[in-house]
Image (cartoon, rainbow, N blue to C red):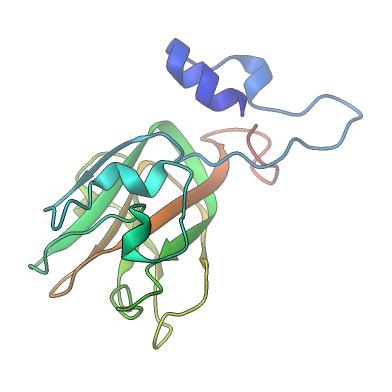
Length: 178
């Protein structure tokens, strides 16, 4: 994914935002992978960066690949994608060895700043039991630099968060970012 390389160099190149003429579109780029993360609290060593390390593990806590907050009000987990993007869809991997319903009623929010309260709720996890892997959702092109998973009164445990979209203002919103 050229976007990650451009982020590490401090900017985007024109070639990293579109596919070559006449060829197939590039494979989708996970905009969250390796991004800077924060969360409202940490429990049991479940650091926020585990959700963007490229490893969803097997969904068990013992795989050491899941985040973990406390169960306050509110609780949240957030990733900074490094630049504004039109967010098309996401895959959210949750814990499967227990507690599959912890993310039920959680909001997925796209925002321009780290203050997620000013953002757009693009999806809410509504499935009872929340057992499908991954939980797939859409943000319909909502634009922002930050994605937040937020809810109140329960723990947030994310084993991986994948986010797909296109650079904000791109003419290629329907194509994946490479």
